[in-house]
Length: 249
Ligand code: NAP
View 1 (cartoon, rainbow, N blue to C red):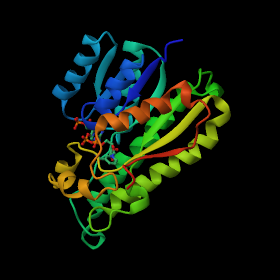
View 2 (tube, helix red, strand yellow; view 1 turned 45 degrees about the vertical axis):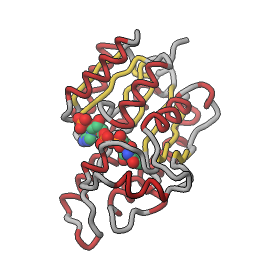
View 3 (spheres, rainbow, N blue to C red; view 1 turned 60 degrees about the vertical axis):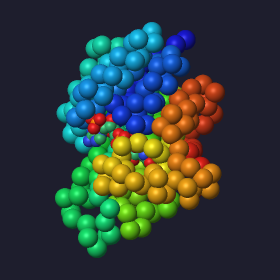
View 4 (cartoon, rainbow, N blue to C red; view 1 turned 135 degrees about the vertical axis):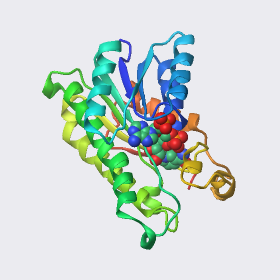
């Protein structure tokens, strides 16, 4: 049986885009969401379709409930029932200590990284859980090694949001384990994407990569490979797992 329809949030760039491409290569039909960068989203969709796969893109801010509902509805209308979720969309703020944080910034980080992941999980479980008449299916949450390192002097609020994502993964996994839904968490380390520049540190990968035990930053494709493995039947007995993809960091 083909894997089905996978919704990947933040699938226009970075880890999400690599995941969308890798999942499509593994047979998933992919509905990816983006927030602003329609051109990047269209490029990922174009690559997947050119390679013989099925894909679509939907604009959605995952922190806005109606956007999440619309994204799932669009995916269903275009590709069919959603049977897998990668909750990947996430943001960091500018480098700052806790004693410099504003409430607005923390609220935004928590809204996108935590509320967004929970809303997407809710919609996925409503469709996939056998309790709701669904066929079951996998969920992968993209957290961060920051959840165990804490990101002191950089963005403790972001690290705390990823701690919440880890806990969401463990709790939801146990909640729906007997309902055909597997929930796992991938925790990337320092990965070469645009996120560092968007947090005001375009040199972060070059600066911190060599200090990783493996001596380098990771690639989005290396994270995507772990996500796609967790989505697949080879990971059929994994749920509630936290998989570090962090070069030993
Ligand atoms: P990225 O290159 O900055 O890409 C972020 C993606 O998320 C883009 O597709 C962006 O859409 C989308 N996005 C941003 N805000 C959104 C929102 N409010 N609603 C919906 N989509 C939104 O980031 P990345 O490095 O691939 O990170 C992906 C995930 O991995 C994040 O959860 C991040 O915390 C986690 N992570 C990354 C690293 C790393 O070193 N890169 C390490 C650990 C964890 P647009 O293209 O439209 O802007």
